[in-house]
Length: 330
Length: 270
Image (cartoon, rainbow over all chains, first blue to last red; front, top):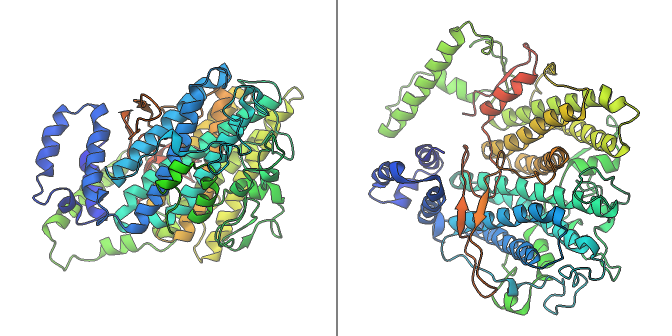
């Protein structure tokens, strides 16, 4: 990584960048000294400190950018604590899947690191107790209550755990997609690029969760070649086909993740994942001959922040709600 | 240099061609000096008798249209690749599992849809689409699953890094949104292909900046992102995130799969 290039890029994007981080522009001296000493491991801390100093204050980071990034941070905490908790429960995750979930947990931790680096030290932090992974809005008795219970109802081989992971990471990728245009300002192009780089990792995670779920249904854990089975709620493709029949089914036969595949508000901007018209171009009518399913699979749809919060609030406990988790005004 | 085909408007080149009447500010001077050095290097490179440097490269153009044409080029390449896969000795063998054929059928459809959509979007926005590119897949082994998956991984990973690196150049948020809708599907493809090659390699250190967290001691300890990152690559790398790539860097890789009369450049996006 070229720190000088980064600073120069930032300065081009935001002429006041150098003044933001150091009014007297001693940054080059600082960098020059640091360049000889820092190890790769120290670089993120330095970078984070730069972004803190440049954009960490609410006065310099545009308010709408800060809100989008705060929602992203909250979603990362939702995912991080879920996977981290699961990894600590003996007998929940099949041994063939431990490495994959560890990787996902570590990536989410990295996203928290990155987002806190931009938002600054005053960014909120959330504990595992701020979430209700049953999906019960704080009752602890929602439809996904057995997702963290080894061999609980619907959870043989962690099936319900992986279903929840699929839903969380799909909400995550749709939320980042919905937030990207807000980050697309001249002064925040580097933040946009970082968010895009996180967004695609959420999609990679989601693809893996779906692959695992296919392998559970086919009884072939540890293999990526189990067949997808229509209508794709239990054994999905690695991509979203129409709305995957509402997504995973809970033990009480409800569809707790259906909103994750549905339309947001307004639906013209945030359509359901079954959308087949892009930029006003209908892709299933002449001159095209593609099916609804194929077109819907080829595009993931964004979701608006209010709809994301409505979904995520079901996974928020009373302590979390008291901290304002998933309750920003957009 | 004058042989570049320009499918769209090229305001950057026009600007550079104009005399610099206005005094150059101190900071701007270094930008121009840098650009001149880069341009000089390009000219010198163009003079070499080197197979890797083709003066007939097709430039994707500038502005949002240039990025859309860049995406259109990548999707043309991917669509052509999966069309070849479906004609390959491996795919057509009776022993090939139906589930694997289904994956390649889906990938071929998705990429063809991306290609056709981007062409239609270019036309709808009065931007001249790039020509139909001629591919050169002679380096790919289409007879074995490993050969096909290895090439597919390159195309998909490259596609994700390309879209992520291109987003910042878009000024029209409708186009940025469309790029976002497509890139996550490319990432889904990449993750599955990688899992098919080596299980649990859906995000590995060759494409993602890995992170080793220092985990909270217990449920009442706050986690503030502590840990050690391995950050490399260009494009504002952050932990746990993909490594985006600049357009010309991507095209230098992609040109290996394009015929000599279809090799690309992205001179406006350095």
